[in-house]
Amino acid sequence: MARRALKLATLAAATSGIYLYGNKFLDPNDFGVVRVGRAIATTAVITYDYLTSLRSVPYGSEEYDFLKSQVHLRSAERLRELCCANRGTFIKVGQHLGALDYLLPEEYTRTLKVLHSQAPQSTRQEIEQVIREDLGKEVLLLVVKQIFPDFEFMWLVEEAKKNLPLELDFLNEGRNAEKVAHMLKNFDFLKVPRIYWELSTRRVLLMEFMEGGQVNDRAYMERNGINVNEISRNLGKLYSEMIFVNGFVHCDPHPGNVLVKKCPASGKAHIILLDHGLYQVLSESFRMDYCCLWQALIKADMKRVQKYSRRLGAGDLYPLFACMLTARSWESVNRGIDRSPVSASEDVEIRSNAAAYLPQITQLLNNVPRQMLLLLKTNDLLRGIESALHTRASASSFLNMSRCCIRAVSTYQRSKSHSLYRRAQISLTEALSLWQINLYELFLWLKGSQLGNWVIALLSRMHHSTY
Image (cartoon, rainbow, N blue to C red; front, side, top):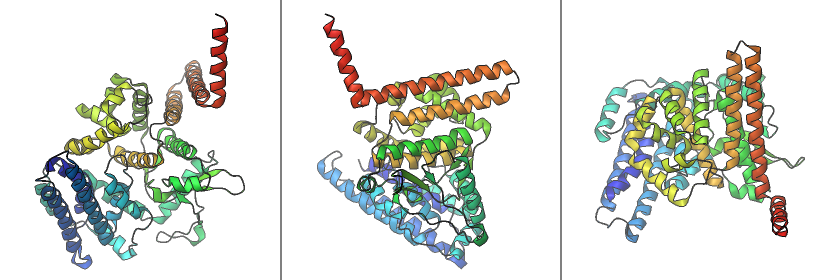
């Protein structure tokens, strides 16, 4: 009873607290011992609350569900207070957790969402201190390992240590912003703030001011006449293009970094992409394997799912890997992730399994290429946005992904071919595949439109009139 709830608590508490133990070290100049002690104390209190509050209550009863919700809320508030008190990397993890609507209980996501737009600010001295901290890691990891023996989290420490200096180099952020703006210039709905280089340095970045509503704020979109499905579809186009075609990926799309606004002049809805400090550059071989894996997932080709999952380091955990990538159950993956939307029962199953399989998840994340880690984080954040907008698992998103995968693989194949005939053959196959997708998309549009209903009704009448 309480043990099952404890696993769920661990998913949130360990993901935030444990992640951060390895990044906050004993530095008297910055009172690091206070931050570490605060994190350990918070995790211990959360764990004790779950164990004692639910221990004597029958599992599955109304009282159990009520008490569990109260414990979730108390624990989420403690995590939020911890993030606000310790700041720095803690805020980053809190923002990530707040976007996982499809995975974590509502009490957690609702409480942590405030960090997307109301996070406390850190001084430059506090931020630079995070970079300098490199002592005491082994001691703290041993302490946490004793508390949570099932978890392997050294990869989290390494990734955070590698990425944080990049995020704090504002010249690097400015270059990334200009690069992605040029790379995606064909998407007229995308807006990236202009950089004022003459007033910018490594420590100061001056850019164009842009404002709008957060991308997960469905009420804001409805008030301003913005089509929610169009925004979700265009966001999917952006990220499919970045991941599959260009291999240059904005890896921090939490709702505070992705805004939407309706242009008064044209009436078109714009997506505003902010915070360009963290990008993942994908190697060509990794990108091709990832493309082929997603093509196999969309086609429900289980042999190729297994093949490319193994090539990406999943090993025997490839079913879990497929479920993590798609945020769908294994049954849905086998049936075809584009065949049906996520049901309420499947949503519950996903949340339960995430807690139950956390040791396997951490093992898997420790084995996959480092490039995959930020992609998984990006997937989580995008799925959280789709969940908030109620647009998860839409057919159009998979069609856009398919287009990008086909283009990416065809471009790669042409670059490796020295035969003019072979390159022409690849181009023809690409054109036919894209044409099939366009035709299927037209069919879906007709099926869901009023015109399509009239055509179906007319054909039905014509059929019956012949008899």
